[in-house]
Length: 447
Image (cartoon, rainbow, N blue to C red):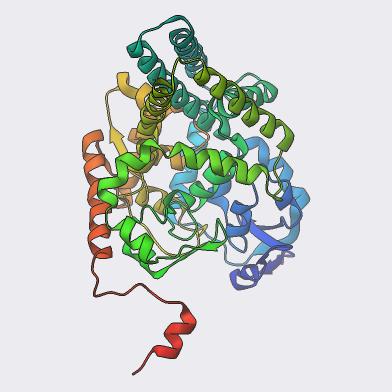
């Protein structure tokens, strides 16, 4: 019987990759998501940057099996001509299917309960130390405890943004706003917008916001060409001021990480006050504003400005440990300059991520980030299951000749500083002038 299906080629699919005309392919079926992009829970960035491609692996990674039933309403009636999946993709999808059958995506353990109880204890002790103790040392320790609280809130925010950590979606949302917006001052909407983009474009210098830290840091000399950030929609200029900062970045890395939280505060307000489509904007703003009410009030209860500054520095410095952890998993890994693709999902995630070896009793310290490769491949997987699936991922990488990088916490710091130092030394090379704009180069290029 003749095939009555209507087919389009990959080249024809690529033409539908613009706002208002976004088509994707999942397992060879073509879907029109032009209107859905505004309602997509993961934000518009993933669809905008993977449009015009087959995105099966990314879809499988981020969506539960129940999501497949909603695809038909977007079906265009076309199929992708000569659709095929690589052997790596086939094995990856089998793993997702096996983990689903094993119930690993649903077995979340009691991590959230323990973390919430720990946060309540840390908050209570910090407040008690300020209100009920006169000792300077007690106030210093209270600042450190507040920093520990913010670290734990970061793990809850990270987990709840990827999967439902509470019994219902309503309680999950409550946990997000309480632990992120109210207790830590970080908008969960900003985090999801930023973090989903990072997962989709892992270690792309132009598309991954987690590598775009100019003028303070540049993990590669490719940034010296003043690349464009397609996430922030601006050019990352490598000017004389940036060159100066980057040339010393291996010395300034840890001090800057102590105050990296300031950037998260600023980014939260920038998004919430922008004209972007932000779900639950009022709720998000209420949560963030509540933080900026209780935290300054708590600090004002300290007896003098010296102890107030000490408390703030202690809380920020302790939280800096988490900001360092965010960098260790990717700064020293393979980078690329290009938009993300849908047909090399497994390869890009493994090449761009670094695992950190640690005993199981230290898992609380890393919050699941020690299994960064596993997390990037299976972002919906509860962190308590990452250690279980690690051997499967190692075997798959070995089978297909792909890297599975895993080092100690100390070594990951060494690799990160080495990466920053290498770029810093290149930035110091004064024989290479700061790039001018393209018009200047066109006019002044000879030969």
